[in-house]
Image (tube, rainbow, N blue to C red; front, side):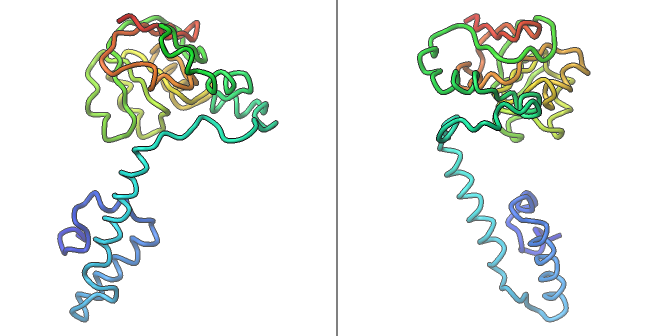
Length: 209
């Protein structure tokens, strides 16, 4: 409705606003119907959407470091280990991972047992999910519940972040798919289209070619 009346450039623009802003945009639309003009002007919402899209594109060009400053003591909290797969030991490993860039193995948490070989598909956002083909191995930074339907398609899952109770680990076990989570750098070590082997019982991903 907002896109059809020129308040948004397209329907996807709705995801650039908070729900409070969305309420304001709807009020603007209703006011424009009643009075013939919107309080914030016709260019207000498209300009906000354009600003935020530009900011997201710029941030996507930058890769943040694995950690900033000293490793905090809270890292040893069991809940953090189970949910995020972050421990003092593997954080130190991630921070010095550059020397392993030529290695053929990527290690993480053994999240769901089984061994599968297949084509790695690097997926870094929801927009790239459509690239997955049946039998591909998902290699991602992290998953959330909106990604659940793709587990029907993939043969295995590998994530940078996550522990034994992370979303990727739980859903992989439900579907009986091998999964290795909390690798720290799988999305940078593995190239899109490479053939890999996922050993979910050992927590090892092997780059085959």
